[in-house]
Length: 244
View 1 (cartoon, rainbow, N blue to C red):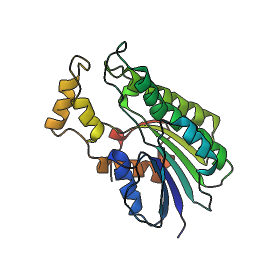
View 2: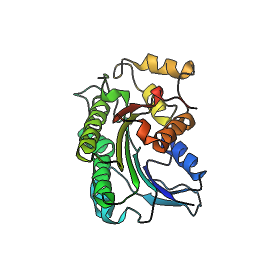
View 3: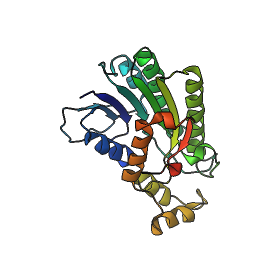
View 4: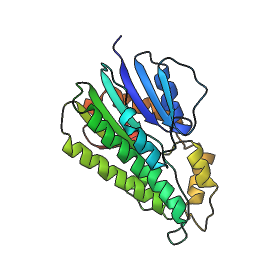
C-alpha cells in the first residue's frame, strides 16, 4: 500500500490529539508527531519527538535531521501547536511570556515551514503545509494582543510561501479551526473580565453547546488534506467545510 507522511506539532492534546488519533486509524500514513510531551502510544507508524517549541535553539539544532525520507505519495506538515498566551491588555503583558508566545505561535512554525520546503522541494510527492490560524488573525480582540498578532503574522507568512512556491505539487493553507472545545477555551473562560471583555460570550459558547468537538474538526482537516485541489485559496476556515 502506498504510504503518505503526516508531520504534526502539538499532538499531545486538544485538536492535535484528535488529528493524531484520526490518522493513526489509517494504515496508509506514517506520522511524525512533535510536542513537549510524548504520549504512551505504541505504533510502528508513529514516531514521537519531544521538543519544546518555545526553545528555538533546540528546534534549530534538530531541523537538519527532523524530516523523514521515503517514497511518499503525499507529505503533510500541520503546524498545530499554539498558545493563547497571557490574556491581558497591551501594557500589562510580561515580556518573557510574550516571547514564549511568539516563539510557539509564529517562529517555530516559520522555522518548520522553511525547513520543510527546503527538504522536500524536489520531492515528487504532493506536499501540503497547513498552519493552524484563527479568526483572531483578522479580528482585533481585547486581551489577545499577542495571539491576534502571531496568528495574523503566520497567515501572511503562509501567503508569501504559497506565492513563492506555485507548483502542482505544493499546497499552502492558513486554516482557522473555528471555536473548538479544547483546553484553550478553558483558559479563555478562566480569564478576568477586566482583562478580557468578551469573556461572557465565550462562556456562553460552552453553556449553549456551541463549541465544535476536536474530532469533527479533525474530519474536516482530513477533507482538506484528501482533496487539496478543491481548496484553491490559502486562507481557509473549517466552518465553511461540509462533511459528506
